[in-house]
Length: 153
Length: 153
Image (tube, rainbow over all chains, first blue to last red; front, side, top):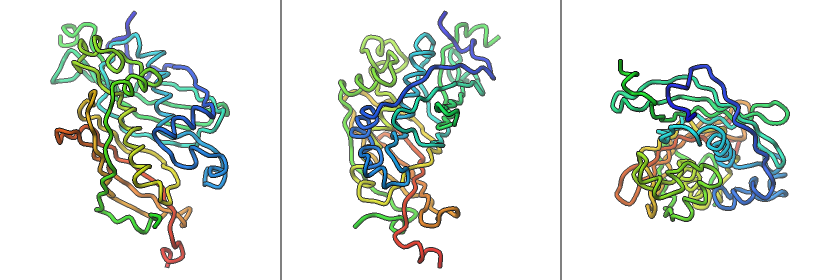
């Protein structure tokens, strides 16, 4: 059944899968969107504060979004997002790291201007294979209501 | 000359260039990282709240990061970022839109724990060809000092 605004309860946590960062994907993303030496080149990265090649933070966020869409939003009433309230790149993501993502619902409200949809605030908790948090994202999404008339009653 | 922490003054605004979002790039990014119908398919997008194909917000941010790196950070003492304080996807970015980005320096401080580097807070103001703001990003970056001894004096 398609997930609608009404199905999202504050406190729910949904595991949306995991993603392994291969070297060639880290480098390919960086070449296009974030060509800093520590995302591109092993020798330069070894000499950087990261002491080795690390994924762009925008790559990490984008890959986690991919998990969320494929494993949760794909069959939902998702209508996009007004923005992100916070991103914390807590620890570097390195070649071969496998990052798993849990999406927690932390707040929700029906929109006053458009009462057929609501804004849902979530927190993405992203953890590596050593159980270390590498990334926290506080996000907002807009979701259609299954039954707007009921919500207004 | 390489841009270091000392060169960044609060109130400075740097134009870092512009990027045009081609249809094939919008779709390719979405297929990999954000396969929601309104980023992938014209007919589905026309029926969505966006009324047409729009770039993933993660694509917009990543493309703006590419401008920033190529036209500003490339010759700097950039040492990565602890995170983002806010992203606001104010208006959709559509096929053929040209988005220009201005990076404003809004705050800076030397790190107490590592006095050879500082944290610089910036605001990315991203505007389309109709002079409409489409994206605001409040970001933090870490930059090496040119002369840490001088800064501590």
